[in-house]
Image 1 (cartoon, rainbow, N blue to C red):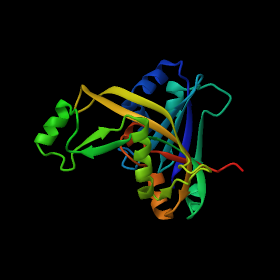
Image 2 (image 1 turned 30 degrees about the vertical axis):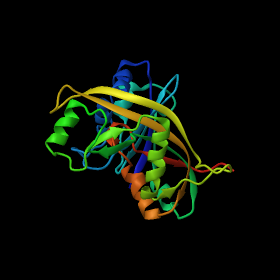
Image 3 (image 1 turned 90 degrees about the horizontal axis):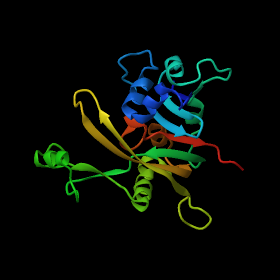
Image 4 (image 1 turned 180 degrees about the vertical axis):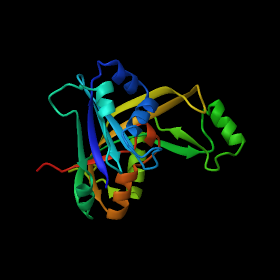
Length: 237
């Protein structure tokens, strides 16, 4: 059974700052909340920050435990609960054709191309070595291209974006960012740059089975680094 969690982080703590600055460390901390190691299930997460605290949303396929995150980066002795865990199944059960929701998605809008305008050294090597038949991933950096990326793909995810009363799709492009960090491990020292865009608006379910798969599996690239999680909320009347 899938679960959606919200964990509150204290941005004044050194442990939280280390996680907030590096998506790879955050991903490792998120995986540490699952007892079945090594983790083989799909795990999605997203950061939502404010002036006083950060919220970490995590979607898991099994029951998580977040004590290590609270002790490392939260308010361990606070009176209020610092981690909220809810079953995600009721939302999936309500995913019927024609039902509409408010949504939020933080994504990494990219497209594959074999003819990038300004390829990096790594991209040139991959293209010359034919390692990627579809080409290399190139980020969309302008607001117009990022919105176009979303509207071109939302149908493949089982949704549509209803129009506003004025005619255009009911979606807004909010925070746009750039994550830069050094990836450790087998490719130690490799610099990673990820362009992000946060979309808010309205979604209508067109294909319930496909929509459920998109909700559980995420969409787009950089899912290990806080992108791809679609969250839904009822539309206020």
